[in-house]
Image (cartoon, rainbow, N blue to C red; front, side):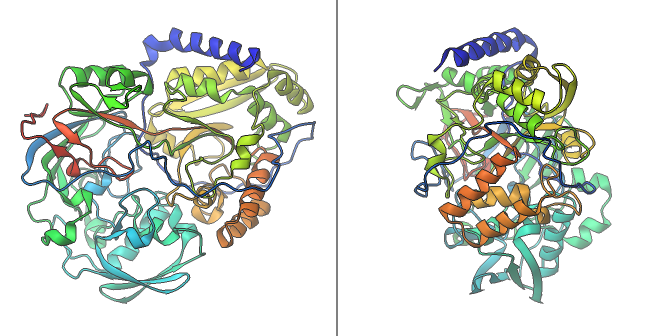
Amino acid sequence: MNLKKILVLLLSLAMVFSLAACSGGTDEGGSTDDGNTTPDATEPDDGGSTPDDGGEQEGTTGADSHLVSTEFITQSGANQDGQVDNVVIAMSSTSVNVGPFAPNSPGSVGKSALYGKLFFQPYSGAPIEECIPWLASGYEQIDEVTYRVTLYDYITDSKGNQITADDVIWSGQTSLEIGQFVDYGAGVESVEKEDDYTLVFHMTNTSPNLFASIVCNGNFCIVDQEWYEGASDEEKSTDPATTSAYTVKEFVSGSRAVLEARDDYWQTDAALNEGILPAYQNVKTVTYTAITEASMRVIALQNGEVDISPISSTDLGNFYDSATGESLEGWTVLRPAPTYVQAIFPNMSDQSIVGQNLDLRKAIFHALDAESIMMAAGESTATSILLNAFGNPLYQGYQSVWDEGDYWEYDPELASEYLASAGFEPGEVTVRLLTSSGLYTDSVRSVIISQLNAVGINVENISVEQALFSTYKNDKTVWDLMMDLKGSATGHIANLYSYNFDADNYAEGQDGVNFWKDQGVYDLIDKVNDDPSDANIQEFEQYLRDNAAIMGLYGNSVINVAQDGVTEFGYNGMLEPAACVYADDYVSAGD
């Protein structure tokens, strides 16, 4: 590590420590909202050029395909005999919701306990051949892009409504239209009904695992259309008709949600529930309670006020011995693979000064040090991965050549040169930084702001709760830079590209996650989807770098800790409390 990097790390650490009292550590997120609704954007002007950029890719050697590290848990849980009464789970956000089409929130209620999917994916990125029929009884592949899906003809929700093919088609389309299920737009050409219990999915391309990523997707919440259209807004958000194995017993907005196992769950054949973790019903009542401060979640665990909680990486030593790889006495720790992608998105529309000026974007990226931001988030190289591309090395299709060169190297002097080339004196330009207060603490924001300030870029800080963030992120007039968390539903990097930059995934006119209306990127997405070869993937990444369209920071995951009465986590990429294994002498915080 060079002297420049050491100095920035020391300065960043000093800033983090000075903010610790007010920020309370890192609030770990479970998932982010993927809503997308804004008017159009136009192609940005490059704004000049100077030497150097995000780094040319050299060589042509692609990485071996690999989904997850064997050091981390990818799936766990069991269907145990008997049922415990309670489990209490801390959430890191107050953006609590239980409705089928409400925005997903970080560290919030697991929707799979409430809303069934067509198939259940046993681990993140599992191919359709390994997925388990859930509301569907099976599928038939007709050709490369066409699949026939058959539903069970006896599915009923918690209010007694029968679920048919019409409800499935309507649920998918509704979730797309409100911006919750953006993959559906680019992945599904059409869905047709053959009869009440048979549908045919026509996919848009042959991208790896695409069909599985749609029919198993956590945002594909299937509900009865007639009930939803006739229910009041309060009923939809507090007493929804659920199609999975739990229903809502109690809901307090911004505070807590209590789920209860359905005695009338429609799938009574235990053999057909095997492997579907949310259907196990190992616990009768699941209580989610909001505790936003990481330090307070640790205290709640230690005081026996909650049974399970997400924690910051900086708090891991209280519960886990990294040297031995074992949980400390009294605790059970879940360390999933760090497959999320944390990134900085520039607003690429003509409504943003950043989108109109390529050199300003390059100045911003060279002013930021990913490692300092990662450390400010409470992460470390023991729990997270510094990224060398917009992609995670745990994804299929990741290219090892990216790890051999520089990727937006932290260089304040070069950043200052780019700022001058962009046409600005130090202090002349202000950018608006949008973040979720539920996902990132003041420490993270302060490191970003201070590093931009250091090269003469002023920052207006826009930090809002997740619900408002889900609205603001889709409004091109609100922000210039955004930090957000992304992932791949298929485990392949092609899905990450399509999810973020394919305009078909977004409301008309939005043009992608950061309003980038660019035919070049759309053509490259089609090229990668049709042929995810090493050459095509490398070409896509180079195009992102040439246009300074995004900066990958680090990959991470959510670490969960439970009291040792929880002997095994239910997990398939998301925490599934219904499939946790509970000891014979288990006593819950809720008992």
